[in-house]
Image (tube, rainbow, N blue to C red):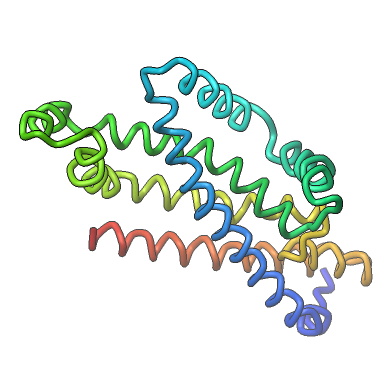
Length: 215
């Protein structure tokens, strides 16, 4: 196999740019998804059916449909409808955030429900409100248990962000496709992309292991 390192070298600045966009899209997706997922998770755990059913439907939809379909729906449907035009980066972040919210909602639910109910009852017996109990008693303990799951979700989003290349978001796979089209080569662009994704996910896994030990 005639492997040409010179064309990789020429595309390194663009791959670096794509790496930064990949981190931006993934980090924004997991951050916004975690905020939205908190509300979705509490809605699903609500005793009020008019809150529980819509949140359950939201989770079922975004967990039960392909992420690529969701990206297309946001890029070609939601963004033009709301903004009058579309933007690939904004669409990528929005789609990943909506998708991540469905998964983080389940992470919140599992983490909160893993805390012994006796602690909630004890807090209520001391006169604490439900909000105070969640804020000061339940969530601080639950979040420690959620760290591995949130870390895994972030790593998954880093890899799933590659799908946004199909709406021309300038992340890693987008530049690999441009490189392939220019040089009609397969190995160089996609092995380079695979190597970058491996470095990102491996580094994240090590960072998360360190955070788990410190938490």
